[in-house]
Length: 124
Image (tube, rainbow, N blue to C red; front, top):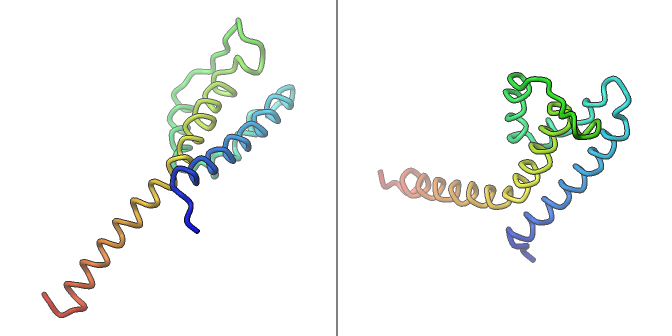
């Protein structure tokens, strides 16, 4: 039984969103700790292509805190950027992952068919 790309993408995105909410809850809960931002490191591996966006953003973005928003939600580098990157872009990546994989598999099949026709069938 095959699952549609949309259903698989929705399931993957839902799992990612649930994991993100759990990690965000732990980050907020441990915000009184000195290294509370390290909770986001889970997503560096999990959201690999999306997590590449974080490197330039965290290097170039200043340490800003919004005074009208309660702590830790006010921290730009500690909460707002990780929420936008991992919560929104990462979840969208997991929704699009089945579509990307289908596209890559289809391209790979076409390439192997061309190689098979040209080189294995003797028609140079």
